[in-house]
Amino acid sequence: MAIRFEIIGAIESIETIASGHGIRQLSELIEKFGDGRWRKLKGLAHVRLPSGRIRVAEIHWYEAHGIGKRRIKIKRYFD
Image (cartoon, rainbow, N blue to C red; front, side, top):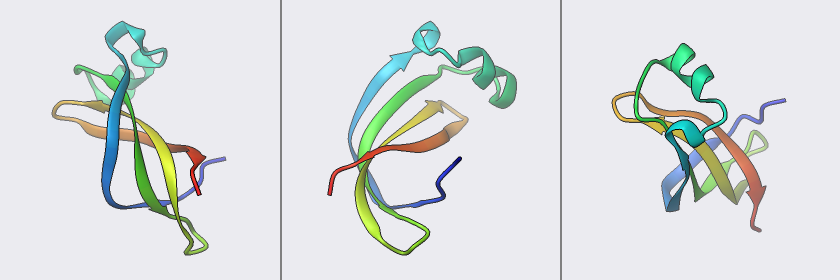
């Protein structure tokens, strides 16, 4: 079940988790969004939840040059 949320402000402390063939879902990403230099990243951001509450969360997403951020998800909260 996906949680709907909105990222408020900039994403901070961005780190690369995996890139290229180190990404388990690489074939799915290429099939759905196209070929590119895919990377899996994580960072911290303020997010607004459907209830209106704003929390600090660690988010993960996939990104490729020319394609942008895809499949953004919250992994955990820090407040």
